[in-house]
Amino acid sequence: MRILLVEDEQTIAVTLTDDLEAAGYEVRHCADGKDGIAELQKRSYDVVITDVRLPGADGLQVLQAAKQARPDTEVIMVTAYATVEHAVEAMRLGADDYIQKPFLNEHVVDRLKRIGKFRALLSENQRLKEQLQTNAGGLPGVIGSSRAMQAIVKTVRTVAVTDASVLIEGESGTGKERVARAIHQLSPRKDRAFVALSCGALPDTLLETELFGHERGAFTDAQRQRRGRFEVADGGTIFLDDIDDMPMSVQVKLLRVLQEREFERVGGEDLVQVDIRIVTATKVPLMEHVSAGKFREDLYYRLNVVPVILPGLRDREGDVPLLVRHFIEKLGAGRNYTVKTDVLEAMSGYSWPGNVRELENRVAQAIALSGSATVLKKEHLLPVDKSRRAALEPSEKLATLREVQVVAERAHLEHVLRSVGGHRTKAASVLGISRKVLWEKLKDYGIE
Image (cartoon, rainbow, N blue to C red; front, side, top):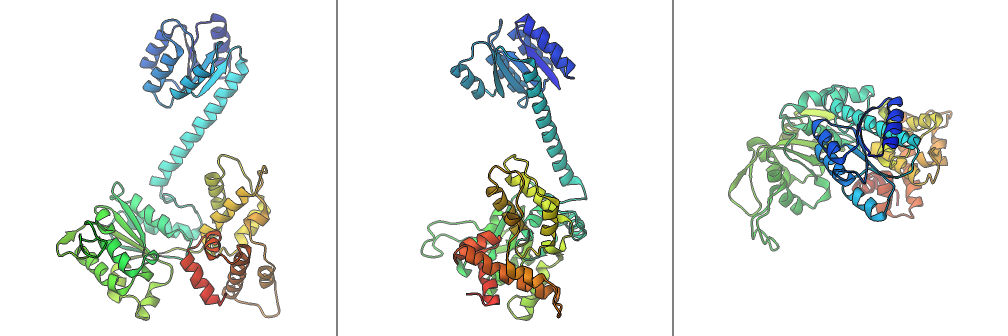
């Protein structure tokens, strides 16, 4: 790192310069505030160490010049006349540290080492971010290197640069919206809007208005004209989640948007034209809805130009440890939490009915319950349920994998419901699924 030392006391300047250079840093010394400011205008520095009281210009002026020349320059203020007012003003102007004289040079060297590590971490994060955007080995915002996910990455990167409609199929919690966002970020539309809407979260009448907008006076509460999600997404990408929940009446209007790229607002007659890319997602095989007469076949083929089927977490071999580390970094507030190898192995063998969302919830719970410990406990990361263990034990009549998963999922649902006193909203939050999906699962399993 390149360091500028602005200090008028010769003894401090000489000894500190020697120790900093011995630690491997490149040091430039100025004994005058004006000289320090002039130096900052000629060259950029990673760190500026400046006294507060200086001839020519004071340390606060040096601080301001350093931040103006390069905002990410770290500035350490040193003074023998430390006051609360000085410290507050220095921090307000952007100082990164405030050291009172006399000080040990070793403390300054240690502080610079921490700055160096932090800068290296920022550089690595930036490198990984750029790699994530350009490297064919990953997708923006999507974690996973399993064989199942590699196939997804290849498909998404191939189709992202086109305007083809994409239908993402996957269980709740598999990351369908993350993949949709990756498609948008890797497309030529990345600088325009990405608009997401869940079709299952709104009543039929409200869904139509939300998608297409309405004219003033279209209904009782329509006091003014309102743009719908399609207009907001003009030039960008619209993501319609839970498309399997879209009512037939809205499907007809969506088909026209796909065919003509135009529509009328609710209560209006004027045509509104849009340039959009449509990505949809379903939690069930949509062809089953087509066969049952719940979804239009012509719309299905319009949406399913490129199908992307996301695997459940149980089918992503090797991805659980990567995801655990990612969630620890995301949720750990800078603390270096660890998970023992045997616990990671047990987590990799669990079926994860709530998929990645359930895993994130478990990591968040383990961190919240860890207290002062930095090793996350198994009982916080995995559900403890005797019926689930019994279902997995060998018996004379071996069950199929699907039968075991059904038993485990039912047992876990009952366990969570008991834990939250039967409160369905809390249960859905713990499981990492929507209340609607929870209701459907309880209905399927006959759980009261």
